[in-house]
Length: 636
Image 1 (tube, rainbow, N blue to C red):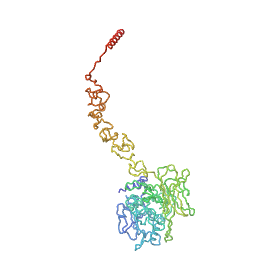
Image 2: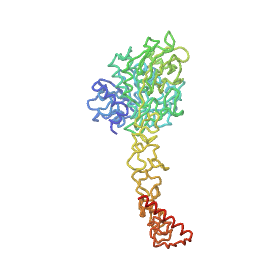
Image 3: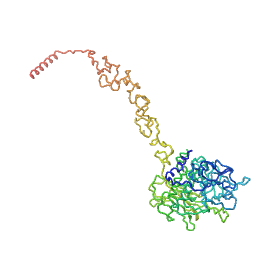
Image 4: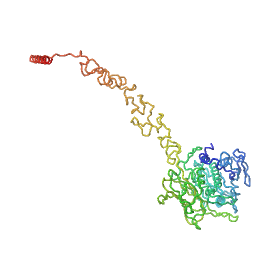
């Protein structure tokens, strides 16, 4: 597979073309890679890792290099295969050391702290169990809550891979609320999370994003690499944010690089329709069927859609834009984000947040993702308190045109920590995004990211992808478009050129099915101009292949000619027999201008009878002649 192809598919090439030398690359960024097995470190001698430093943090070091860890590392921070090739500081942990040494699962101590900001977890795990194989549900629950707390408290972003089995329900680590889960664009992966406790319930979608890869282990590091790029850019551009915090390691974290913001930007920026070059897997029916629609506005198969780093970067670069309630502008941009540090109605915090977007230009999709972390009490003076609360927020898109207040889209799940909207904007309408608290007052933080993107016509057939049953074939759903080269009758003219309804010869066959180079009946007229291309005598009997003999004289019309009139009698030869002699004068009709007169053209064929004149008649005749003679004389 060409890395350039997948870079195109996930928006990296477009971002690179836009930013040029300003493109973030992970320079100076420290990351963590977690791998399963006793061999869990990448092959440090791989050419993609030249100049990089690896540190195995496990108490029991890896027994050797892992092929799996190597290709994950290539996509995460490799010199040519990743979007963050300048990452040089890589820490490695085995899955067990990560769970029990770093998170300190099974102890009362709080998890370790680190200045690293991104971890990739291309592994899956079942419930914790004892030596007898008995499931330890409480221990599993405590483990999940430890990771929830580390993500929220230290802004330590965790990208995880779900199981490649659709039906498998392993809880580690997809059941964790605060992670970012990366699936496959072909949707061959886990679709829903496993149940662990009263908070970590089943029925939630397992997928946040997808990547066109053959396994979830390969998909996750692309999302991790994208997260590196976004965090680096957000940290380098402090002006994008209105505030900051710090983690336990003392690192300054701006609002645009918080775990909730990065997750929201990745989800809101994801592509809901794709035209991949690195894979035949594509998204072309996002949330079309009710069976694929989750309660929180996602698609069970694809989550928010396919990773698009170009879109996600644009969301952060548009800058933080606060709600009206927090003093923000009355009209914001159709691209942007907001981090709300205090929300929920408690202690004077807002219970509603409104973001006026202004007037839509049309032919655009609007996406918005609201993300908040699970609230875990966590560190209490060195003792870890696993008490957790899931806040409940709702997300709405409201049409405010001409003073209206009409909800046109909403996301209202009661068991998720993301709410998402995907909506087709109407040109000339005004819209507002609204966040509301659900239930009793609370005080918690959230990040909201949004973006309007233009419709796309991938195959150039004049039909936008979301309305096109095949976004890669310009001949579907119709071949009568300029972009389609289909030539149904093989005559060198496309269906589009010949026209959908054109019927030149007026027969029952339309031109695009009626060849203009084929002459089926051999009458010298191409099918497209021939009203009966299976009959050589239609529309003309004066062709050599037609044996019509209109006058029945043994000569075809073609042989006698279309305009020949041998006897110049006004009747053409092919209608006038050269074997019949209607007047019996020995001259055939075709040569006899007077075929009804025996005396013509040959008088010898006639016998005349001289009539007898009486005496009285003779006398009258003599008188008449004498009279005429006198008139003639007098006149002279």
